[in-house]
Image 1: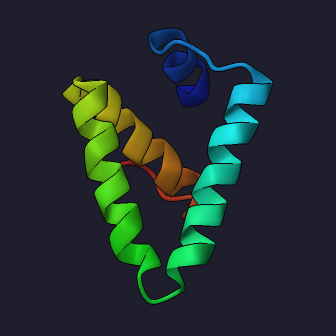
Image 2: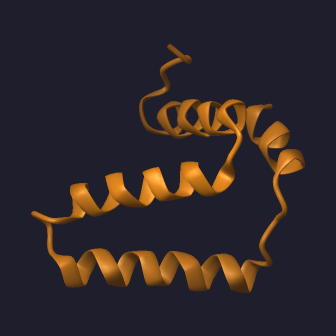
Length: 75
């Protein structure tokens, strides 16, 4: 349900665009190496949150990402 709400709130990328972004993300993390990847992801997340510009949308994305990983409900 949360995923449907997020889709409505944001402009969707095409499958091709999503694939290109995900591929660049993976290649960048590989090039940086395992030790630098957490810092890169933290910086990427902060830049993305700033670009989103909507605290409620960002908080919902954080909750959705956590739920997909460990099944936890929002804090």
